[in-house]
Length: 297
Ligand SMILES: *[C@@H]1O[C@H](CO)[C@@H](O)[C@H](O)[C@H]1NC(C)=O
Ligand SMILES: *[C@@H]1O[C@H](CO)[C@@H](O)[C@H](O)[C@H]1NC(C)=O
Image 1: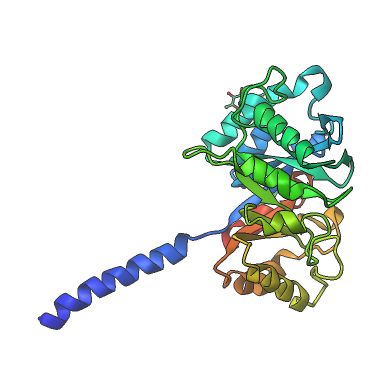
Image 2: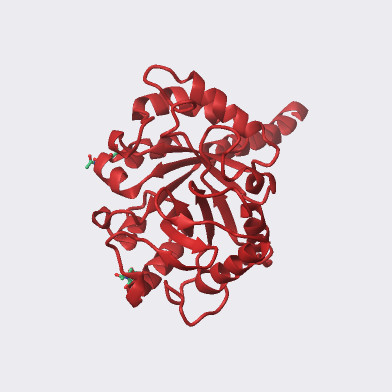
């Protein structure tokens, strides 16, 4: 009798642990905004495939430039055309999908000239896209969940300042979600100091267009070793695997079977594992990649 009454609670707590392991899935992150035929933001969120959408990009800012969005053919920010995204952002958020603004990108003009310039730009982001107020809000009244750093051009200066100023706007109950998409080679050429602040909570590392650390057909050793290096950094909180959504999206494409059977089981051992990021919605829609891998992430 005595052993039975002891065994039952142990058995039940074991079940709870198993259930928790079962539901601890990683997040699916997608970049949206660089091709008008990728479907609307509403349709992207309504697809049920993603947990977080990065709107890409604000690609002109800093050093005296007037900040400017580039969302391909989706809308024209110059005539207020992107305000129509407001209802779509709210629709996504109602579905518990976070929506961030990604700053930077591979094409554009951006840099921060000084700490004061970083402060000015942080204020601009807060007032125009986050919880602040401005008459010029490009996405209207919708309040984005945060800012993503995809800095790939210009200089390495003052990104750490910008991260600190943005983080200082976080309030209890309205935390500003800060993330970055560094390239997989360590240290990142532009974001090194910003990463070391420890304030960029989620890192979706670009394991693509970086031959020195990305997947090579038949060889998962480099990508797994580099993943472990990123995971070992004390300032990494959550780590996500950034990949091209198809062969056309960039070099380093990982066939779904290789990802599911060889890479996922390895990287999911990392307690900091947070999911995967895909570049981008246009390619993902054509390849159906997320739909195929989603249950394994
Ligand atoms: C996006 O979807 C929401 C919810 O269905 C809807 O209210 C809103 O009008 C849509 N926005 C656009 C621009 O279609
Ligand atoms: C996409 O993949 C899912 C999951 O494997 C599948 O159910 C669906 O039919 C696929 N869609 C297309 C268009 O291939």
